[in-house]
Each structure stands twice: as C-alpha cells, then as structure tokens.
Amino acid sequence: MSPSNADADPPSQDAGLAPHKTEAPFDREDADFVICTSDKVDFHVHRAILAISSSVFESMLSLPQPPSTNPAVWPRVDIDEDGATLDAFLRILYPVPNPVFDTLAQIRNVLEVGRKYDTPRFRFVESDPIRVFAIACLFDMEEIARDAAVEAVVTDRVADCNCEDLDDIPAAAYHRLLQLDNQHYSKDAASAFFAVPMSRSADIVLKTSDGYLFPVHEVIIHLASPSLLSDLVPSVPVGQEPSDDDVDQPKLPVYLFPESVHVTSFLLRWYYPSSQAIPSIPTEHYLDALRAAHNHGLHKLESHLRSTWAHHMPSAPLRFFFFAAERDWHPEAHSSARTLIASANNIRALYVPEMETARAGVYMSLLSFVKGCEQAVEGLAVAPPLVLPRPPRAVCDTLAGVWEGEREGCAFPLRIGHEHPLAPLRAALDRRPSASVFEADVEGSVAGGGGLSPAAVRFLEKLWDVVSAQEPQGPREGVVEYGLVILKAYREKVEEALGEVSLKLPSARRGATRLDQSGYQEVR
Image 1: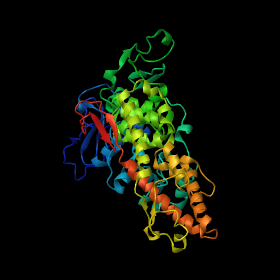
Image 2: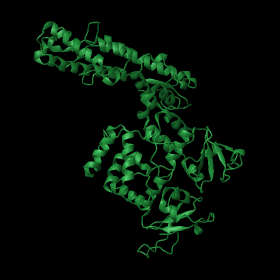
Image 3: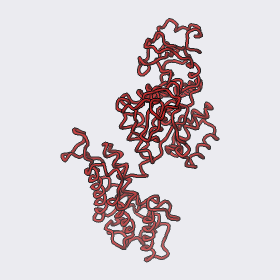
Image 4: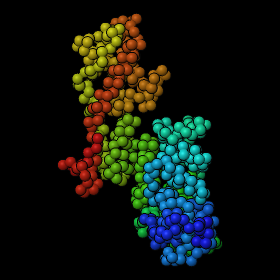
C-alpha cells in the first residue's frame, strides 16, 4: 500500500464504479489526502491527523507534499476496507462525535482496522469500556483491553456490568479485571503531566494562562470546536519573543488560551488521536475542565464530562450545585442538592468560592429546598401511623405496647416522643433531612450493624428494650427482623415526603421552558 495507484489491487467486479465522496467531515476542502475504499468511496482526510494516529500512515506520509486545494492532485491510496468500516474508524481518530455501533461485527471490524494500521488508541472505549474490553480480549489486543479495563474501573462500571460478550473471554482475563477493580485503581494518579509533543506539522501554538506552550494542529482544533480559535487572543508568534532567540523553533502563530496547563493538557489529550491512554481528569480539576469545555464549544467533551458528574460530585456537592445551577443544568443541580443535604450538617454555615460569582437567587433556591426537606420530615411527626404487615405471632403480643390501636392493626405511630424507638432516627433526620441517614456510609458504620447507620441500630436496640421489658425471654431475632420491616417502611415514608419537595431554580434565560408564574423552574 502506498499513496499512488501503481500498487493498487487488480480490478474487481466493482472496478466500473466511479469513486464518490463521502459525507462530512471527510469531504472538506482543506484536506490534503484521499483514501479510496473497496466500494469506491473517496475520503478526503488530513495527513496530520493520520500521521499522529497511526505509525503506518506516518511512514506512508513521511514525504512532504506541496499544498493544493485541488483533490485531483492530492496523494491517494486504495484500501481493502469498505466505506462503512473506514468511516467509523476515522470518526474515532477525528475530534468529532463517535460512531454508533449496532453489532459486535462492526466493532470487531474497526478494531481489526486499528490493529492493521497500528492505531492503539480508540476513543470509543469510554462509551462502553466493558464491551470493548471483552472484544479486545477475544482478539488479543492487550493495549486496548488494558485501556478499556482502566476506563471501566475508574468510571465504576465493573460491579454492575451486564455484558454478554464477557461470557466468551478467558476466565483469567475476567479475574484480572475484578482484581483491578478491587484495587480501586486511579488512572489520574498513574498519569504523569502530559504535553503534546512538538511536531514538524504543528502550525499554531496555544499558550496557557500559566505560560506553557502547546504546539498543535489548527485543523484538529477547528474540528473539535469551529469557534475556539476565533474567540482567542493572538499573541507574539513563537520565535519572535526575546526569550525565544536561542530556540530552534518555527515562528508559529500563538493564541492565548485562558486555561491552566493541567486543563489544557487534558483537553488536548482527549481530542488528539495519539497513542496515549484515554485521559481522565482528577476531581480537583474536573469543574475547571467542564467549564472550559462548555465555554470553548467542545461539545463532545462536555457531554462526556457531564456523564461522569456523579463520579466527581460527592467530593464537593455545594460547589457542584452552584456550577450546575448557574448553567441551568437542573438534573445535576438537583442531585448535588440532594447529596449536600445527605452529607452535611448546618448547610447554612457552609461557604465555597463559587458563591462569590453565583446569583443570590440561586443560593436562596438552595436554602428554600433545604427548608422544604426539613419541613417534610417535620410533617411526619403528625402523619398517620405506618401501616405494616402483621408481625410473627410470637412477636405480636410483646409488641402490643409499641403500636397504637388493635394488635391486629399493626399501626406503628410516627408521633415520636423522646422514648419512642424511632427517636434516634428522628434526631438524625433533624440534622440531615435525607433518607440516607438510614445507611452506614452516611452516619458511620457499626460493628454487627449489617450496613445500618448508628441511628438505625439504636432504633433496633430501643425496640428490643420495649419488648424485653414486657417479655425478657421474648424472641429477639423475631423482634429484630420485624424492626427491619419497620425501618424499611419508615424510610419509604421519608423518601415519599422528600420526593414532594421541589428545587426551584431562577431561570438564567428569558423564555426558558417550565417556568412557573414567579419566574422559577421547578425540578423534583
């Protein structure tokens, strides 16, 4: 295979078909190379992107070519793959939305093309890492399998995976995946600082807010975001600054990029079709990266980062709330507010730097939501009793003094006094009006508590105290078992009450949908 027609395969039954161009972005006039597939589809591509992506293409395209806007004089090569396979393969290399695969055969074909052209990095790994891991294991693609495994572990997809393709991989491969997951591997911790290496084909430079230079390719930046370069401020070209007198470097146009070296490195690594591992962002830089992707029109990356919101948000739910609320991202704001209530006491005393630029109306909406959750929990004090299944006969008599009404009615009162068995849980709910107070991971673990919070364990102890006061030799296991039934019912009652509380965010845009008469958007 070489960039000419001299070494093309013998004419096939399709030889009479005239080549035709494919659709965007492989029909651009700023391309400089043509790939013709077995079904006579011409792909107008960019030599720089192919050379960065593939060592095979890099060797093939090593000879310089004079620039031209005439496709008739561009170098071209004929390949054995069909147009559909090449289209999917190129979309993975290019900074454009990933292809959608409907069948296992499609993914297999693209992986085979990647191996043929020595292209180790595939960005569709992050969309379905478990499936990619399975296929890579079946085809002995160790590097792809490793990248997919790391992506699956970092994004917490191993424990709940339900992928039939795993059934056919070696048991040892699945064992290694589970071991990696058990180690809580952090791709961020293993990734050293990255800068895009200087390339002879780079034609512009991005200068970060902290002074680092990144030589890059204009076509890749433009494909990632058509408006990015037009929004940046040009600077003195590299090679003309006094500090660059002794630097053997081409005089490339420089654009001031208002992001730190960490964020810039992540953005470029994510979009560049290099052989580096698919990058993830440390939680400490996550919001900065998401803000940059949103501000610079990097829509593909923004969508990916938003999909990992739940992974990063619990580390700082108040910061994440303000970030989401100011952008009208209602599901993210709502989940952040819920997580904040579940994890923090005295929310009104908390402060984060985002409050300096956030609107007071957004802060008021959060405090109103917190107040609504508090009132919902308080309302349970005058709510009708819990209607529970009838307890075991051996327990029924000893619990007679705990619930109201007839013994057969099984009505457990929610009018909770100081001595009521549910009092510890009610006190926990006063501090944090969230159903998560039933869980050990919020309130702290208790030895032998079976995953229950200390407040839930104290409830079971108080319930037994009530029973044992009347019947010291009563069935303790039966009482505990029925106490768990009460806890489940009480939790469901709490969740039901909190589910009625709405988070109303002030709209940042005129004419936004779902406005009520006060100009607020309601989210439940």
